[in-house]
Length: 235
Length: 191
Image (cartoon, rainbow over all chains, first blue to last red):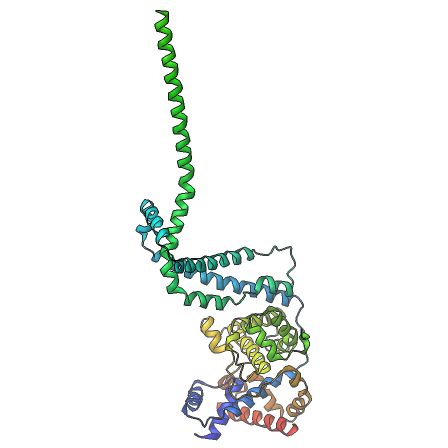
């Protein structure tokens, strides 16, 4: 390796003014072998970073801190949006028939409950815990009112702290196969719950009206009997 | 609990890597003036410079996993990041044809790629070197200082400097290399 050439190129690279040809040469030198002067590159990178010291210090406006906090809050939104988009993509992958046949679903879910193993319950609980976490984040995410002054410290805590959100995403990603296994069960459970909550009322009102009708028929029958008996005695 | 001021830059960065917002605030308090000074030198408009400063910390938060905790050079990483960001905005605002700004672009062009063998630097240490640097810069010729400025603060490449000064590209190249080499020698001598 031409040491002088590599030193010359390092200087230009650190200054950010390499042309494409020189950039290629330098990259080739870096990947060539162990001879590349990495230490020298580091020294020049440190030297160039010293240059702003020679400038007269200037201070940004104090509200930039708050603006930064707001931006960080928006990043969390982006990350959450990505998570939700992923979830939305996963949902249509489920077979539609399972959702469109509620009667069958009831049967399946009843059997399912009997056959469910403790392991499956554990997995289901895990997934529901994740869902609940998501709901919690949603609740925390209300947009701040314009009147409310955005404080950097507190807002960083409240708004921007994603609590290792990227890690959560990766955790969710790694749990994906697990999730698809239980997704079917979740859909069944959701369908069952939906039917239970919506149909129960109707069934209740139907049985009430049946009772009412029965009572009415009985009263009418009793009145008819009374009338017949009365007519018989009058005659 | 340790006083936040007693934490080193590297310790703060470690906390930032754990998405500790208080740590990012500490980093902001410590670095905002020097980063803003650099950005303001590149972008003269106050509002744009402040916007870039804010963006720099967003990039830090978003790309903290790109920071090398082995070399732990917080100072050069942040200065280089701020410089890259400001030059990028300068080029875009100046009408230069640039690739779309997205996550990949940011990782490739804005987040610094420091040498794995770089010495660790912290702001507190660097501030002690101020006088040495000013003396070293003072020893350069006006022409050398000017080409360095055009390159570092103006974000110009060799061809652009050559066109601006109406001199051959080869001359620009050699002037930059000599100027930078002299600066390194002077700073090293002063140590």
